[in-house]
Image (cartoon, rainbow, N blue to C red):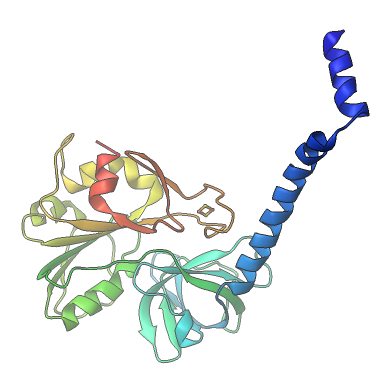
Length: 271
Ligand code: FES
């Protein structure tokens, strides 16, 4: 009875405190919607067009994208692309720079064809940053493609750095100066490299230590960074959590804390 009359008192005799109490959540929600709209308005949007598709030999395609220079993402950063039909945006990563745009790494949507118009948001996220002092760079693709690592090879060769790529399957066209090795040779190469850049599909994270030949709790002999590749539907707009990457102290969001994250931090979360 007491509970019922107490409830009745709140609902039939509202005072100013209760009014505020009821109004605040609605105000907060309104504020969130307004902030979301402001964020959308100040965000970098570009128009792009698929110029040409290139098969990578494994059934996937890369795409030459024509777009303004400011839209071209740096190594490891990404654009979210929407065509006229897509419900969810597709992340595009730089593989090669062109005069009027860039080559987006393979895995573009199957419905894209030359002429497809795109709305592009970005560049987004944190990309690779190879230390200036690095002289021997190891690149390793743990997934199907090494295309997202190629801009690093170009950059490193221009700096006079030695580059070795570790991957399985057929590698993309590379400068002759890049040494190509099978992925199972990577553990041995870790003592040679002074920086390691990895491309890792999110679902392969549990096997990362084994791919590096590291025992439980063992540490890497060189620093490195990892591009964690997976779906990023909201690109940091809604904190949806689809791109969450477990680390020692919780989670990183690949879409905005990454997709390139520190290798040591990732390994500490997966001892
Ligand atoms: S894609 Fe939604 S939080 Fe990262």
